[in-house]
Length: 158
Image (cartoon, rainbow, N blue to C red):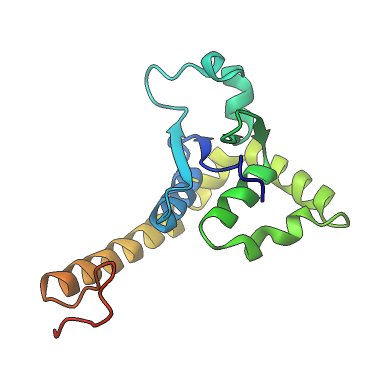
């Protein structure tokens, strides 16, 4: 990875439930602060200020490397996953024999993401509920002294 890649700014549509769910997952794993999240559906967001049109940004995920270069599509996701320690998940998307298939598949998903979100709403709700329960368990463990703090080699007794 280039030293000029991170922090990587992700321009995503938080109004899209599938997109929002995925960005929440990346945000939760973004412990090193390598990713910055910008919601293109937020009031007042100006795509032109970022060198693209609103239609272009809405058509597929965009990312801006630390060096200022813009990326789109699967490459943005590959770098985002790598930033949070999940690079292996999308590594095949960059391999020459598979890259065209992943790119085409992503474009189909991006074009139909709103319909996919509507169809997957029950699953999305279930994943969000599962994540909320997991976060609540972690918070309860912390409040009972079971958390680890940075530099703490021993768990506190619970």
